[in-house]
Length: 288
Image (cartoon, rainbow, N blue to C red; front, side, top):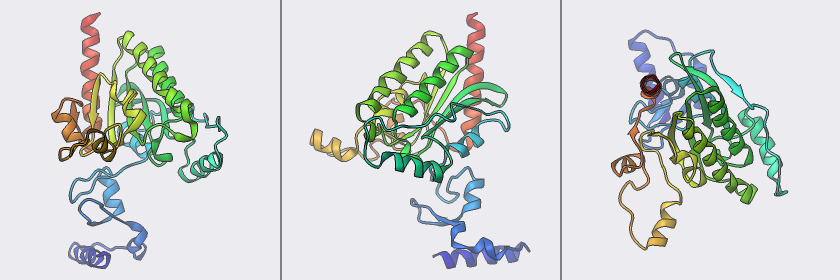
């Protein structure tokens, strides 16, 4: 219970002669891990890369926090920041929902794109944000990712895309599905230019995003236990009329069956990406 947890913290602080302010004991300072059910101090979780220190559960994080963890401080230059969603199909209530999310999340859409450095290595990065309509892909998300890929081609830089999505955005109908083809075509041009694309799959990566750019990386990484797939397990079971294996659509299952290349813990992600960038750079030098 929360009270028991607070008592533990108090006892620990007394033994180490640390003082805890009364404001730090507010319920809003705590979060419950939905995996191990432990009550955790938010600041402790944040300092641990938003990973549960008790069981290793990787909490979902914002694009802003992800960029802070991956990109060298002071090097991120955002692109197409003011590109915002319209309502192409006049879907009732869509514009109000978008405006409310803008105010709540302080971002304009479900992806942030830009230039940055990873341990000094230049890179183009796109980071999807599950806090904005569950990272669903509409016309602006597709356009921003396509523009980021084109930036990578123009500047001859590698691109890294962190994926988190509930799929294509239903409020934009066929227009959202068109983004699958558009982003895939842009990546084909990136491949022709001989440039590196690293796709990082986080929890959850599903639907049209999985069926397009998320699965087209030269190297595909994933966070532990990330849900990755197209349709949900229930839909698949009803279609194939079979019981699915344990852990189906989780990163560990997909690694075992060759769909991804490596599972990387969040604390190791920046260093892993840096090593990939350096190896690719050496490969380019040898090919010249």
